[in-house]
Image 1 (cartoon, rainbow, N blue to C red):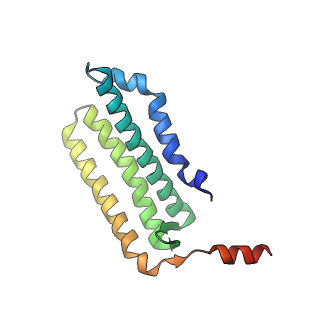
Image 2: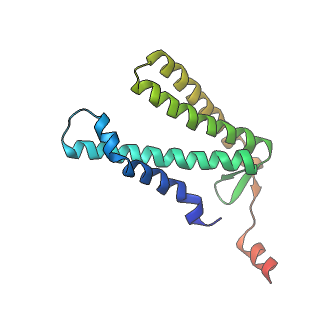
Image 3: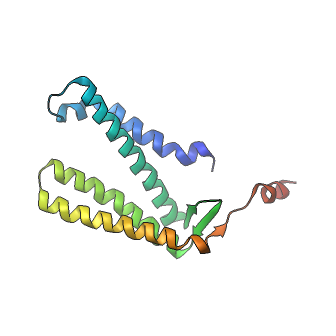
Length: 147
């Protein structure tokens, strides 16, 4: 997977919010345009990060691989569990935002707490798995297979 495919959720998440800037600004109270665009930019960054987390979660849940730093990957059951927890985080955090907009505060707090717990457990699994992460193929191994 190349860098364009790997980081494309960042771009698409931000572009989705920027494409919907008019309806989003319609939900905001009257503020100067600079303030509204600052809020739109912040929401675009959050949507980009959520899209990237969703891609990591799908990669872990369905491909059973989660990347860790320095060219290694967490594989198998830990990757699947962490992937599903990341997907749960994205779904529940979006639900929390919608509940908060509708001013259903108690449900928003409960859903938000579960979402944060899912993200914390996924991060714990990911960090715990670093020492046992499998080294991905290096450039030399890949080139030798092509020859």
